[in-house]
Length: 228
Image (cartoon, one colour):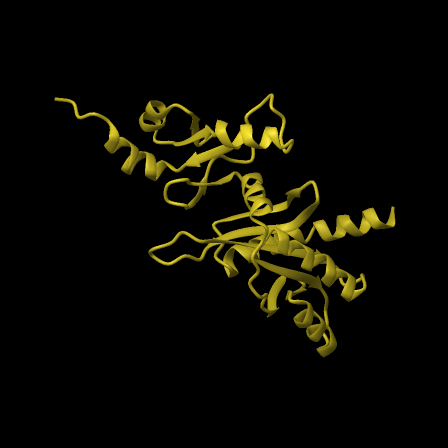
């Protein structure tokens, strides 16, 4: 019961941290309490980091605490999010600053620090950049209703929290063009290989891929026969 009350108090801080994250890191997508079966992240955000020649998107994960848990334990939990995200932060609600020892511990482990005081968040220590596991990174993006385009490699909105695939059509190129949407299709060959290895069931094709609306409009439409 005590653990649940602590979680409830921390959850009240999530919207504050999410709003700050969107402004501070210029995230184009944020969410609260999202994750996979392995763990859930208190606050997650994504932002564009690529140059004019690339479409890199960085995921940032924030663990929110109220300062009533052993500091090294909270840091260790935060560090685990690097399997999903490129940057990981511990946001701690406290009236006093982080001590030099706490900053050293966080720096040694490789996590960023955010102080929450009253209704204000302040980045105290920046997170290093990690290379998350691609499998978990892309699965997490899909939980945020985001997908990777197979043509231009950009991350785009495939839907919303109510319907993940609202902004893409299912293997219907003509409809995607007419509706101004992206496209989702399934890769049978890869799915069959995984089924033979026992990685996935052979009853369904799980290997879904996406093409963004821009590539549908600017590339695929050019492949249509000209009407004379």
